[in-house]
Image (cartoon, rainbow, N blue to C red):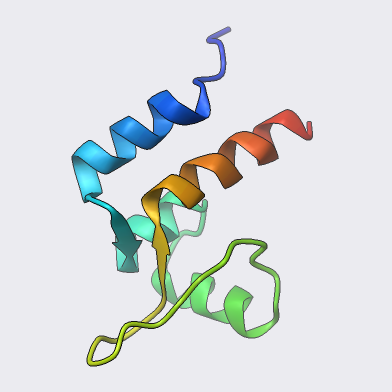
Length: 79
C-alpha cells in the first residue's frame, strides 16, 4: 500500500501540472467527479466542501491549487 503524499508534495505536483488555479475538467477530476456537469450539480447542492470562486469573464468555478491539495489530504485523513 502506498503512503499518502503530504499536502506540500501534492500541491507541488498539482501546481506543476495545472498552475496556481484549477478549474474545469482538472478541478472536477481532482475532486473525484466523473464530469464537470456532476461537479456543477454538487456545487449547486452545496455538497463541495472547498472554497470555490468565479473569475470575471470566465465560465465555471475555480479553486486555488494549494487549497485543492490541502482539502484532498484532509479528506484522506478522515477515513
